[in-house]
Image 1: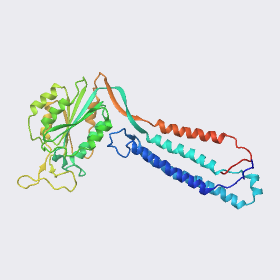
Image 2: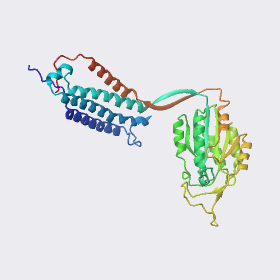
Image 3: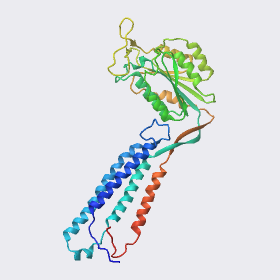
Image 4: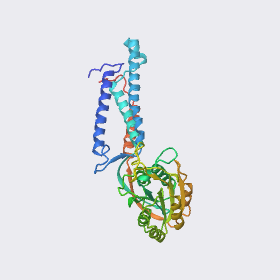
Amino acid sequence: MPKRKLTYTYRLPFFTGFVLGFEFMFWIIMWQLMSIFGVFSPESSAEILSFLHPKFAWLFVLLPILMIVFFYQLFKRNQLVNNIGSINTLHTFLKPVATRKVFWRYFLIRNAVVFIIFALMQPALGTKNVQGQSNGIELIFAVDISNSMNTRDIQGGETRLEVAKRAMNQLVNQSAAARVGLLVFAGSAYPQLPLTADKEAAKMYIDELNTSFISNQGTNVAAALKESSRFFSKQRTKKVLILITDGEDHEGGLKEAYKAIKNKNIEVLILGIGTEKGGIVPRDESPNSVSLKDELGRSVISKVNLTMLEEIANNLNGDVILSNESFPNVSKFLTQINSKSSDNLVNLDFKVKENRYQWPLSIAILSILLLFIGESIPKPKNNSNDA
């Protein structure tokens, strides 16, 4: 067999074409796979692939940088060879090269980088059952979403409901509650989120709240208390209800509601949002919304009824905080929720997303091993091939 001609330069068009062609095919295939698994259609009823930490996707900018580094190194090698010129001089201090071998080296390094990034993004597919124990605290928010909660009498010009959401998220993040639930009320009360150990889901429901959820307007505090008393579990746990409202009750019937709360031994904490001076009630939550009008054509004014809130708290042996700040100080509530935790532990059985980071990480490790093995194999003397 005749000896193949040795070459000391890389075929840059060959290398560039292979790299770009491979990248194009790879991302087309990835796009199709992600489409099949519902990454771009979260409403799909099929098994959905999601990423727990998609923020790491920005690291894919390393790919074009890697391409440029490889191309630059090959270009500089070719430039050096062309400047020397003489083949008799080259073979004394330079070794022959093979473009395909450099491509495979790039391919393995590139795959290790790509699949490490996918592992960092933590793909999740399917769910798994998780069992655990908790201190047994159940926390339910009863949130007023009547039109008056759109009033902007808060420092900074935010709506009362925006501030209520911020306070609830802080309580979810910092309380020792094992499970969190949510109900909303205006002229009537409705469950929004059953008790769940998934605090991320609870915060998602909280963030989506708005005053258009209930068409039956008003502020029926009694209905909220009654519905809350049925919302807790029957387990022997510490039960805490946080009532969030501006305190303008229009319905009455609180005595029966007090009885329902006391029968379940529910601790009640009340967060009043707004000012006693009040503000104009807009038609919706948009900043430039026109005001609501009464039957005489006057703008409706909403004022926090602190007296009523204190009356509810006194009847239920609870506490009340009134705030008109953008970031309400709820440390008093956190102290009460987190103290005197239930002595008995509660067994929890819930589902969480199955993290599949091992799959891309395995491919990345395999690529690194193959690269190490390939670089460790001794090169045959005078038998380099640029095919």
